[in-house]
Image (cartoon, rainbow, N blue to C red; front, top):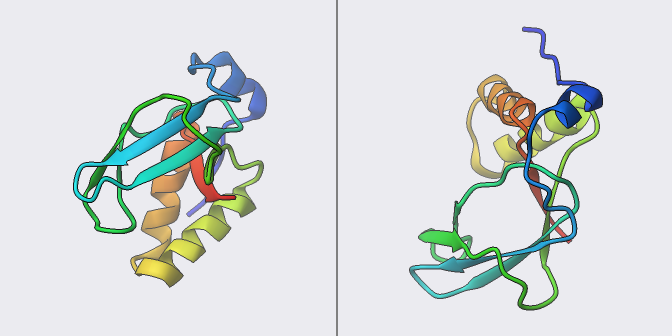
Length: 117
């Protein structure tokens, strides 16, 4: 299976929210844990993520509270997405090809990826 990523020019012509430099706080509905992300790229992020402490839903607050512990970023190369998919398989399991395909579709729609800083 051959994968292709949108070029930077193609991505920049799409309408994405300008969020670079913003702080996004996710608050867990289960345990109350707060996770803080810094946007380093413009793009689309989920409104709900899974809390890595209790596995309940954590909801985006789009507010500035404190220093971020994670960032939303846009990978530069297909190799970066391949590495993310491989790490996902190693950490939680699953089918590499399916995960990589989902990551590429997310990327091509302007999706950003999370990284602990």
